[in-house]
Length: 194
Image 1 (cartoon, rainbow, N blue to C red):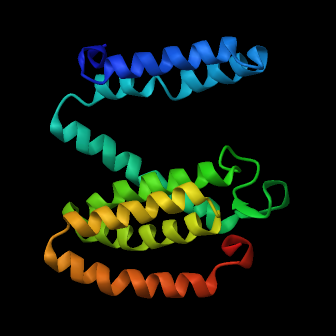
Image 2 (cartoon, one colour):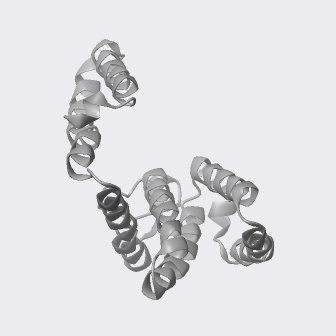
Image 3 (cartoon, helix red, strand yellow):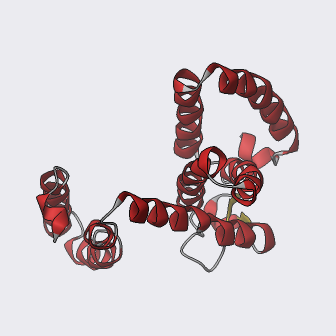
């Protein structure tokens, strides 16, 4: 229950109260409520669990590293069983999973790849190799999902990274981002570009 003593507790409680009120008073109260309960039980419990486990700086880094490595199986699924889905408007997803929604898949990959950035900065050689392979693969699949919101978020992350990065990293970004963008635009399916 340490989370309830943090500065994020009140906005989090207000957000969850808003979700509950919206579910009960919305246009479809029965359907909304049945959607809200699993959402609350699966996702909104996470701050309480993380605060219970991550009690030191080292344990926080461990939790973030485990979350970052969690993108690897998703990339494996995207590469092996992911496909363009007719029921999703021809957008890329992983069918028969909770990531069949292209926006959900893109967000998961974006979040995981941002956590993998720490591997490039602080982990050993294996962590850097893992991140150097997984981050471009994540970007590739994010673009294949044709998720506009995640594409804009990716663009914003790169722009902010450019602003706050050290000069040597800026030069690297100035070289790699245009090359990567050019190659990606050439190889992406036409449905993504429409």
